[in-house]
Length: 339
Image (cartoon, rainbow, N blue to C red; front, side, top):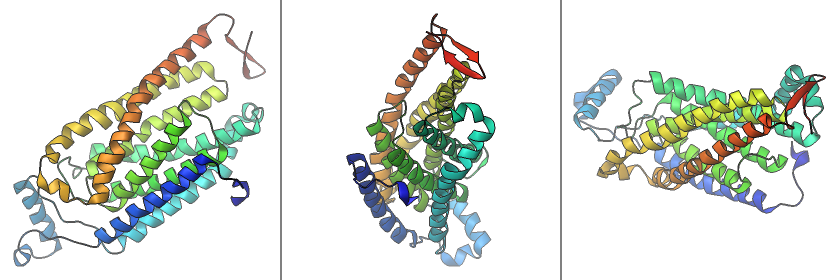
């Protein structure tokens, strides 16, 4: 994969490398803090492990915003790092091997007629669809079925959320490299996209290794549901499935509003504001606070900017398809625009 690395490093490539340095600072602090385990209550009165868990739930119910102990074991950070590394490898395989084969299998004629740069772009979209579907679906299932996923929990590590966030971390690394090296084009500004990826890297590290605020971390992961439809929408446009893309666009805008605006902004802060009024909240550690007050607001601001732009783009696409003289007709299995 190193064969297509650029010999000269443009500005956006330098920005990506600097972001990894910033992210490593998160890792160093988080891995040090993970080993500290805090116990609540009297050790003699708690008893065995099952008794510990029962009493901890009682203590949490009694002290509404009191920090629960970290559940992370000494071997856990290695497992999370391995998951993130495996995600990078899997996403690389999706771009290089799985993506091209799937595209050739389902869209052979349309895909083969694309330029080389667009074929690379389609491979990247295929990777994003598969990874985002895995992360978003897992987060949605956890949100609907995980009883311990409580917005009032400050420190309560949930295995599903942590490992799902670790996979998201690896996917973001691979996705950032793909955008940088393949120089892909999207509906959004390129600088905004790289900024979005850098913020996601920092937030993913904090969410993976801290064991803090699992409810809010899971909300961030649920936003990937809309990414599936976004990439599918762009893919349909590139393959000239124009009318089909309009249907996909409805799902994209609907999921974007639900998971990124309604859930990721309104409900997010509705539950978080009461926690901000407690002194225990500010004991979560610097990386978590930086991710929460530094990464998430910028991330949410980008979502608020992108949503009206996406709606505007969708309206333009609808008009371009339905305008006389610009109607796509099917010929030899391909949609071609007529002048």
